[in-house]
Image (cartoon, rainbow, N blue to C red):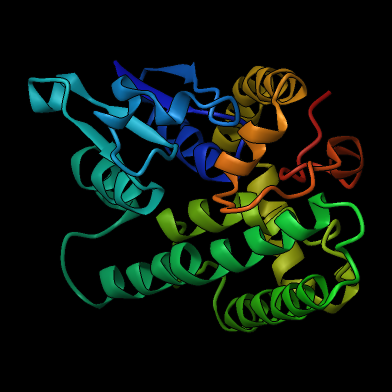
Length: 254
């Protein structure tokens, strides 16, 4: 059994999709990051960065040794349980790793910054809001260009690179980017939407999203300042508006 510590976020959804793809049993543990649980001594003992996701795979390691950072977790799970999602050697491995790192070091941080400024009332059309909207458009274009050449981000086969990017690609519409300009990205996303592992993961994730939203409603201004890493007091997020913009999964389960 693998324990997954997280909240309703795209980086956590990556891990749930991966575990469903591998058919590995897991338990989801909600971490109230917004309320400060990520700064608790018990959580920092698992991840000194205070971030989710974190997994603990006692079956494999023989002890409760945590692994953090979503990209590292995906590599760990692939190398131990799903070599078909990341070959152990050869050029195919490096094609996958290049696009995995493009997601975790480039796409995720840039799209996440746009999310931050969309969350703050009055910031959507500020300099920062416009800057990250422009960068988001470039991110989507870069991945569109890749998918115009190959069916999957790593090449000819589905891999951890696709799992990593999928939850972030669902932000396309809410980021105000015209979907019609990204036909290859949308086609790729649609194929992932129909994948059984993705459907199961999104279903399992629904409760975690709801719990995270409940926690956010009780967060204080100080909680937000600490969560966002602000040295000075800043505006609270407009969570109702943020939620109204749409989810980070394009998949709608009936």
